[in-house]
Amino acid sequence: MLVDYPARRRLKLIGHASRIALSEDPETVLALMPEGYSAAPEGAFVIDVVAFDWNCPRHITPRWTAQDIANMQRSGEWPQI
Image (cartoon, rainbow, N blue to C red):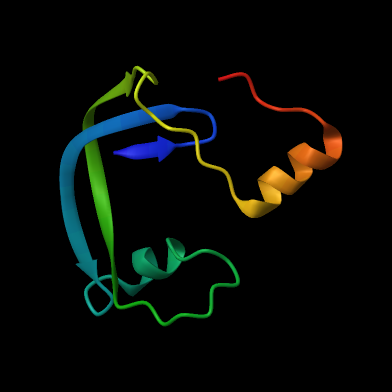
């Protein structure tokens, strides 16, 4: 499940995950690493998504970072909930 709290959106994914070890397929594992990320990868998970569903936002409590709140205070623009 992936949740975007400020926008109150939730995506449920159903799929089959497989783990790829670095020793098994280094090219794929390294290709999945974010550019500039300094951690040494051990492997990766690849999810074959077979279904998804966008859910109702009714019971998702919005959450914002301190920086988001400071920006809203500065601009005077607050999201409609």
